[in-house]
Image (cartoon, rainbow, N blue to C red; front, side, top):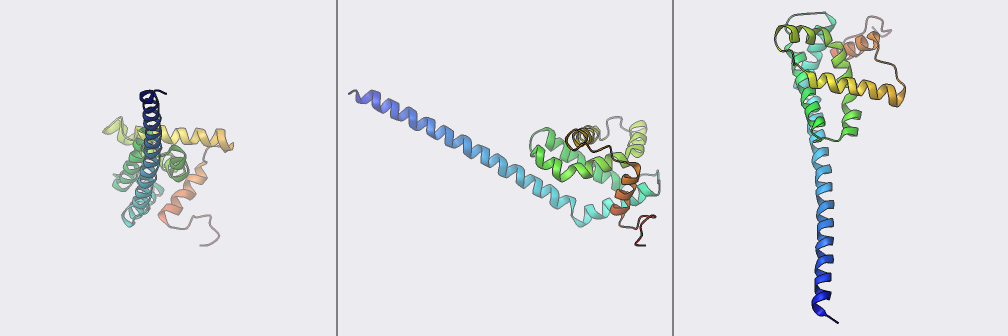
Length: 173
């Protein structure tokens, strides 16, 4: 028996096992980082500051207040951050869909007039990431769940919920 050959084979197998182990460690590390990032985003989205911004933004949208809506911009900027992390693969695509598709599509649909105004007057590229991901989520809902597009009444009910006020047609006024 050639001991050099045997030791070379053992060394190669050991190296291969180490590489496979490292690959699994990297995979689990990536999953942990993605989950942590999503948890941090969720914590920020439900923070008192963001809740207040969402509430005021929704009230202004319901009032058709076409003046500057800094709170809406704060919400859209947050959603743009989610979009960029989604596009870069920094957060899990499936989990992002389940955690943010509802918010993303409804804020996008309810803010279109405001965004049009900002794009026309200031920045034609404003919130293009939000637009792309919202449209992707809408298409996914239609294909995956056979859900029709979100109706105007659903958007209005969403805004009333965000504004934390009773919907005019609500039985619980």
